[in-house]
Length: 381
Image (tube, rainbow, N blue to C red; front, side, top):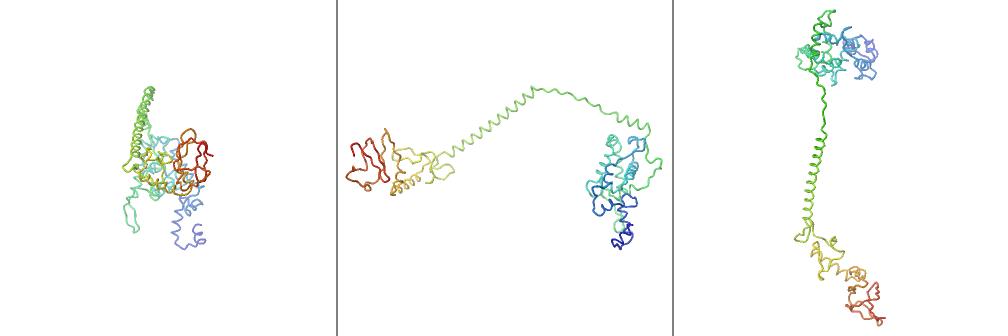
């Protein structure tokens, strides 16, 4: 059927030996027929989620003869080979399916560690048997498979030594298909009663298990140690805080110390548009003897005087009033108001003559206009 379908449906014109080889590669279980699962895997290169073989490989296990256990078997390389062979036949799978379930790297080849770890899963019920006996036999079985396929023929037909320490599908299948040297009645040999008794004695003589000792916890010592730890950590934090505070104080002194040109450390001289924060909104009168802050340089003072002179010469009274100090009214003495040049004032016969320096009197009525400030003394109308 496979030959007929390949030639009539797909137009294959090659030799029949090629079709036989393809069919043999598809028939992994050796049943002589292929199904949907094998054909899907051949075309897609992977198995579908409902493949029965995947479920079968998960349920694989080594089964000893009826009425026996794994501990009663006399383990050797031939025994492991026969048990694996029976497991494959019982599950209706092929060597390639078993290797795919054992292979973790996905290269369809088994390393020594992969081979040993997968066989160990079948001895989880008796790990002492695996550690004391079966593990050494499994290692010898892997070495036997490698030695069996040590020499291979290359494309030219010459025998070439195989130095790779892995086994593939062909090597594993050849090892499983090799004829057994034992008789059919002695395929899986069993241990004698004396051997079982000796093995049980060896496994029973183990190191005595110490009963867990109840440790007494000294709460006082633990609390004391905890207090010391916290005290040391708090002391360390205080030392660090002092160092940081000293560093900040040092930087503050360096930044606020007066420099040769009246500027701050690492800062340029004050400009005319910068207002110092340590003095009032107006600059003090140096000629009157008021104190001057160290932040005010001679250059900035001269620039402020120039700006003040320009504003005074400007005919806007608002600018004049802005630069004049605010008057203090009430019982205190009235500071001398700025009136400006006498030539700008217009006098009349009904108004008293106002000089640039009026006498010090106690005013009763003060009237201000938008263009001049006039002080009326007592007795004036």
